[in-house]
Amino acid sequence: MLRVFKWVLLLLWSAAFAAQAQPGVVAFADRPEVENRLLEERLEQLLPRLMREQGIDLWLVIAREYNDDPVFLSLVPKPRFTARRTTMLLFHDRGPQAGVERLTISRYPLGTLYQAAWEGGDLEAQWRRLAEVIAERDPEKIAVNVSATWPVADGLSHGLHRQLQEALGDGLSQRLVSAESLVVRWLETRTVAEVEVWQRAVAIARDTIAEAFSQRVITPGVTTLGEVAWFIRQRFETAGLAPWFHPDVNRQWQEADYGDTPFLGIGDPDMVIRRGDLLHTDVGLCYLGLCTDTQEMAYVLKLDETDAPPGLAAAMAVGNRWQDVLTGEFQTGRSGNEILAAAQRRLAAMDINHAIYSHPLGVYGHGPGPTIGMWDNQGPTPGRGDWPLYPMTGYAIEGSVTVAIPEWGGKPAQMKLEQSAVFDGEQVHYLAGRQTRLHLID
Image (cartoon, rainbow, N blue to C red; front, side, top):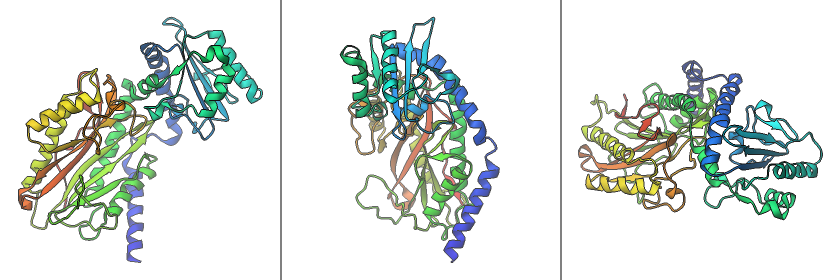
């Protein structure tokens, strides 16, 4: 009964705090206006540039209800949760003066951002009309979303692909090409207006972690790891912020035996938090179409302590140096594999025991773009690691350093850090700052 009472109090507190502490969160009813304004700018200004950059004069996105193409919702106005029946989007670049024509050949309209090119009929009539529209425009390339490398660019199902080929006939079908590079560029690139919205989302994530890693939530010897994770989750849900994974909370301590694992820490949700623990959390939310990914660390003070042991503070500083080395290797045109190798050489020369597993971030938490190491592969990542770095793209600067702690008798502790950032073409900017000091829990 006591455990149930604790959970109820925790959830009520989280809900009450979320309701009063998120004044900057746009109400649900007002979000479509914000998202559609951002989308219109992307369609009007960004898409034409990207289509010309990739040499694509016609891009076709086809999806069916509850089997959406991963790029579909990033292209259509809100509120919309899925394709309706068979929904066809067609983008035709008519040149710099006329711009990109946006058509929909679909049973249901898509608002003012798209012009309807079909007034209805059965499914066969819809496919015939699509073929007519394409033939009238006579494109050199018909780009469709098929890819062996990028899951987000492989949204055209086998059945739809076959129907498309039948509708186009042998002649036009010969012009079908993969849209994978265009899809990646569309999903990875941010506008200035989006970055402003994104900053708020990242700040909310960091503020939530700071609250979770405080004595307002954690009572040493009583609170469990799972209760902290659910506090974070409940606060997001109550404020209308969609988590893209359940928060992870784990602990390290001086006497721990972690077994044979590359990551130090134990995350059993029923485990009680103790004084002297080094805590870690991994948190991700999505807001107004953009996702965050954040990892921060905290220390639970012992009764005779007013600050963390100097060795742990020094380990955090090593983590910040690791971040600086990695982001210092970001250069436009470099591949993710090249950035990884360059950073690893510098860190090895500095004798910093590290792991790098940074990834693109944006519409998806694990987004398309240059992979910069993986937690289970500290070497080159074929394909996705070969993608070059472009300006105005977002990243989770993610990895860890392992440092011997004198106050722990030389035993290691791991600083597992991750912050959301944007690369502007010249340098990396953290969207809401970064952690430089441990959160302290009294």
